[in-house]
Length: 459
Image (cartoon, rainbow, N blue to C red; front, side, top):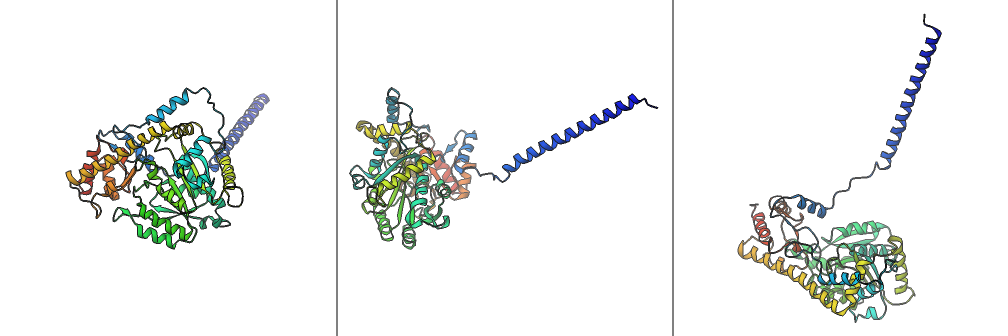
């Protein structure tokens, strides 16, 4: 018979074991609850698809093929395929670096005053009546993306025909196709993007009749986004006479023109030429706003420098006046980013306000624009004369030289584009768009050869 002391020991041991087991159970339950709670908090977060352009670039970077070409990137490259820092921008940075009076204090909410004043002159023209009458309201933005965002947000809140309407009723009409980010931006600020006909794949050009017909049939005071120049992604721009037809219908239908100008000077090499459509609409008293970017034409991609300009019907603080618009834009800016960044604005402000540097900048712009134009001619010559490549449209390969700006719609179909990427190692989007800035004297022949083989089904 076990002693009492032995019995007591066994009982204590069992009790201790049960306590340890219970403690372990509680710990597991707490850990499980914690894990479950953490999981539940983000349980409904969907996996977003990767950005198509960035995914394309990632594929290019991982490719070890020695003749690979990246025609997806939306940034200028020199003849050696390298990023290009404009000489005038280098000079501006040196001047700023040597200026001991500069500090890192906040900018005014509207932005750097010298930049804000100069950027509106660049797009509207120094002799613009809208400027002399103090009807233009301008704020500095986070490049063209920020300008589009603010423009959409401002219209969503204050555009008179939309007051009291639902998101579904606030329709902003976008060209089909348009810059991939437009729809996302406008959806995020309470607008509903709707396509309007613009590009004709049969002619690889502008479908003017369908566009004009759509403008006539759209409800009065509709909002249409227009690419001021160098249409992204097609490179298809209206002629001046066609712009006049478009403006006439805008005026008749009282439509609102939402201009996106990301390539002023970069398209033709001439700043004034590329601003013609905007200035014509202003002269016709068509209500409008203009988004500006200095990513391309100044090579300041990472500095994110841009502007939003809204043209009011009159100056002052009475109903509809510029001062009222300005007051609300400042609130919007304050809510979003508080104050815009300084460095890019100082660079551009210096260039725009110094006569000698401004002239140098214009020369730099021509260098970039004309190199792209030369690449268009070279690609066209190779396809037509050397390879005698069957053309995808009724006008041969003339669309390569008639389109303008950074991008070209080649007319290649999705299967041909897939072959270009997978077997030609020429990285381009599936809709046939290529960045002309990615072409240079070292790779244009390889690209032309691949296009020829893709069209013939031999790639």
